[in-house]
Length: 456
Length: 178
Image 1 (tube, rainbow over the protein chains, first blue to last red):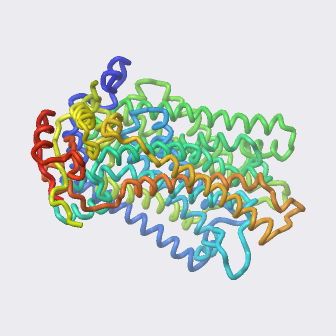
Image 2: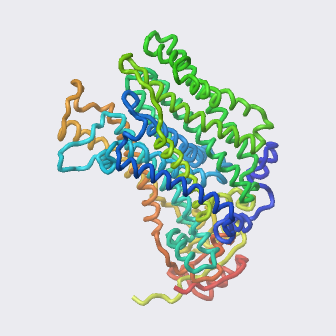
């Protein structure tokens, strides 16, 4: 049964509004790139994002001159913003892979209209994430020492360290995400090549599409490769945040050394990632008139995913607190007390509000149908997930075993400039992506149309 | 060898159903060197033109095995042979610690083989191809469906093949210059 009819039968909002044909879907999506002039709003938005990017480059440039002493990192809190932001960004990326790979394997065809820009979001988020550990190593020009390569120093990396696992997990994730995104683009780049009137664009899109011509043999291998890649990306994405959580869980610091970390990190990653997807999708569908393709159904499904993963995260907090109380380890018990009553207690209560209590509003159907409401809640969740990493990194480190080594963490303006700057870099990349490449997968949208069905 | 000035005969169809139907009939009529073009993947089409051997999974399997083995052996050789470091008396060959990177390398190599294997088997990148000489072919990436019988097919005969394709009720027929 075609998707359109199935939606009607299930009494759900359709994945794609009825009345579209192969031609109109193609025209509508490719017009954003090919014919629609860039609006003033686009220039203003891109300009602001670009300025923030410049601010980040300034902060990073100053960091290279002065060293990480300009940040708030001190002993005992040696990780600070760099690791908080790294974990936050890489978590956001996870929703893109979940949508493109896991939902593909689960045959959730509603993903077809949001997978492309969610994958782009993944790439840009991973780029922002990758920046932080690289500039955090102190001598960033030597960051390549992280990779095992034969060198004249005759030393090798330590493979028993979770930080090394992280290097491999994140670089594999970045590579596979980029490949997945690119092979998804190939048929659409061919469409743009054939639609544009400009000779120069024809050549550029023609080269980028590798001369794709839609042969049945090619499609067959393409589909196999795409499906296998989805099958590979699925365990990969789950492994990446698991490995990120190992950075903490393998250590002995109270508040880090727990076995609940991997599942609750993965759920938290997907939680924040879907919040970012919604924060991007809601304005994009409005501004570019794509409400017919990114329908109420997509918003509702994303809201439900957030609700589910949010509850897993809440369970994670619950287990952490329970183990602190029940486990009998006095340092763990103190970590719990310190979260609730220590100097960073306001952040902890803000975290509980943002990640657990406010998102419960998503149980209300009316709210799940309201783009503005979803947009606001997504913003709250993104703040909450950032606070979660703040609590994990800072509050665990600032008071560990020895009272003599306790300390406080105060981020400096360079910390804030770098963090806000990466938000600008992320948005600037998204703005460019929207104008230069099809933000919705055109060929996958065609397969959702009733006329794509082959009748025997 | 002199190149045939004609690459093949191409017929255009309106729908996926018509294309699959026509492809099946053409294949059954004894034309073996044929291909079909569509704006999105159609499940039955590859089978209809008689394409069964998809080597992509094998390439991915080999890639994954090579990646996993090289990942593990790299860690073993570095940690136990070339640069043994005694950290708290732990064994040099501490295999549980090597699992994560072995897994990541398996995925990396398998994924890279999937993409580049697919492109290589498809003969891409290939910016020029004779089918692009047909002006109407630009719709193959939008809403039209095409079937081609290559002139290298042993049953290919300009007039007869055209007549046969006309019998399939296409929207148009064109000869593809090479």
